[in-house]
Image (cartoon, rainbow, N blue to C red; front, side, top):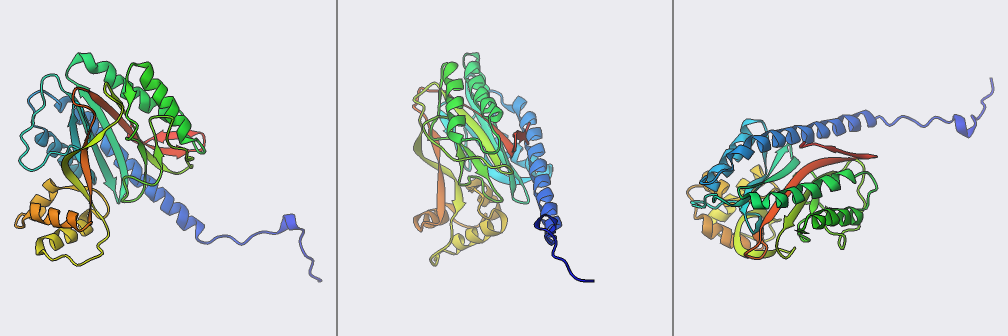
Length: 322
C-alpha cells in the first residue's frame, strides 16, 4: 500500500509528555495558595475580637504569628499593627510597650505562606465609632477592585474606580500603597494594582495571584517614611561580612525566610547570643538588607486598610481569603 500524506487538518501533533506533569504542578501550587488563604481567613476572623483597648500590640502580633504556625502555615510577612496615622509596617520591636488606646483606629496586616505560596490579608478595627465610615471606605475600595479584576483588566482603570469609591465616601486613597503581585517566596512582585487612577497601566493575566489592598485616609492621601524600621528583607550577598553574628543572620534568613521579609523579634529568638543591633547595622550598611520603614500619613490623620488575596481568572477572580 502506498503512503499518502494526510491533509493539514488531519495532522496530529505529538503529545507533550510533560503536560500532565505541568498540570499536576499547577494544581499543587493552587492547593498551596488556597490553604494559605484559608489559614489567613481563619486567623483574621479569630483576631478581630482580640483588638481591644489596653491590649499590648506585641502580644497581639505574637498570638497571630503563633496561630499561623499552629494551623499549618508559615510566616510570609511579619504581623503589622499600625495605629491611627501609621499606615503600615509597624511590627513591634523587642520590648515594645505600646498598647491599643480606647479610641484608636487599628490596622492588622499579616501574611501566610504554604511552600512559599502566599496569602496576604488585613483588616481595620476602629474603637472610635466616628471612624467606622473610614473603615468601610477601605473595605469598599477592595470590593470595587475585586469586582473589576479579570484576565486582561487594566490596572489603571481599576485604580481609577477604587479612587472614585473611596472619595465618594469622603476620604482619600493612599497613592503610594498598592495591591501587588504574589509569587513563590515573593510578597511584592513586579506588577501592582493601584488605588488611584494616575498610576499603573499593566494588564492582569489569568492565573496570576494578587494581594488586593486599599488604604483610606482622612489625611493627605500620601505617606512618608518614618525613621523607624523593624522589618527587613535579605538582598543578595555580594561582599564578605566580617562580624560572625551578621554571618549567622545571613544563614538563618537563607534557610528559614529566603527572600521573604522578617523582623528583628524573630531573629532575637533564633540567635539570642549575638549583638542583633550591631549585626543589623552592619548588614544594612553593607547594602544587604532592604528596610521596610514604618509608613505614616500626617500626624493628625487616621488611616484604615483592607486586604484580600485573589486568583485572576478569565472572567473574574477567586477570593482566596474570603
